[in-house]
Image (cartoon, rainbow, N blue to C red; front, side, top):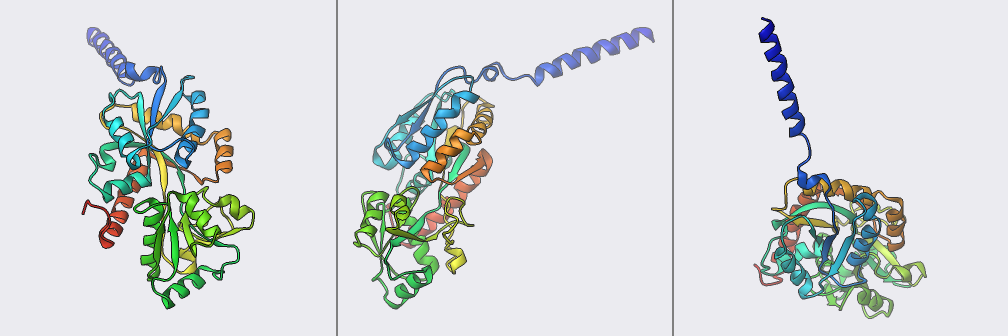
Length: 327
């Protein structure tokens, strides 16, 4: 009996040691990251996406063993070139990919050599719903004024966007469908240009995202007529939603980071913890206020569900309006 008890105790000790070893981090993860990570941003320097990621990179070393997050801008082919470059990098967890709603739209507009969810979402940091801008002295004082005018004058209302097939254009199409109106969409070379066209009265209004046209709003030269968010945005507390004004158009344009699906197991989860600390960092929060961006936190799983939702949304809009060359 005594021998049995001793043997049992030894067995428990061995199992305990094995179990303890089993819950220890993989050696690859123990000090991860132990060198700089490169983040591919497939948009230009100084744009909203670039500025957001640089704000994250500024605080990242505090939570990542002192390592750097290096931003590499690859601005070509409406984000496609940067994403293709990322697909060719080693899936070792030391390269990441910036992702935004515009990139999800691109996969539905044209036949890209990848799908949005070929990559694994880690998190999303902001939710920048677009808004409708009008000139300060516009005849449209409310969204109802604009919709009533468009219904009485089909195709006459002009609305600027940041380029045909882009996020602002698709948001404007979504608004048009939800409001039951017909408008004249005017593409420009970017969101800033479309806001300036509204200021110059070249168009009746424009669909924009932060921080496009906001300096003119603050100067009293432009007005935000509505924001296409689910609820009133903290960044724009005095701007009513389109939904609250009778037009059920909700458009949430998130921005976040992806990683290779076949990166070492556990790296995405560890990065999610690191980036959550970055997004909650006071310095980062202050920077977002300067950028007029609406901070949010979506886990990798939540961001993946949002991407699925937006793909369904934009696929429908693209097919209905016979845009692009994918469908």
